[in-house]
Length: 81
Image 1 (cartoon, helix red, strand yellow):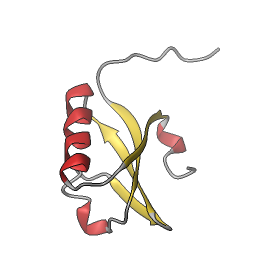
Image 2 (cartoon, one colour; image 1 turned 45 degrees about the horizontal axis):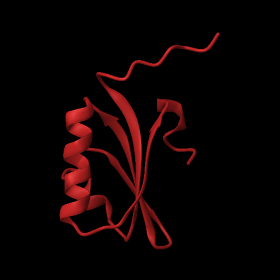
Image 3 (cartoon, rainbow, N blue to C red; image 1 turned 30 degrees about the vertical axis):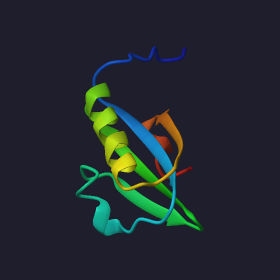
C-alpha cells in the first residue's frame, strides 16, 4: 500500500540550478547537501514547510542562478538523483 503524502510540514526536496556552488554554501541553504556535476548544482535536504521552501528559492534567485527544477523526494532518494 502506498503511503499517503501530506502537503504541509517537513518534506525533503531536491532543487537543481544551472551554475556551480561549492559545499561552503550549505550553511546558507540551511544545512542542505550541495553537489555539483558539470554545469549544474543539486541542493538536497529536509525543508521545514512551504514557507521555508519559498525562502530557499528566493536565495537561488538572489544568487542569479537559473532554476532547473524543484522536486519533492523521499528521504532515501536524496543521494540517488
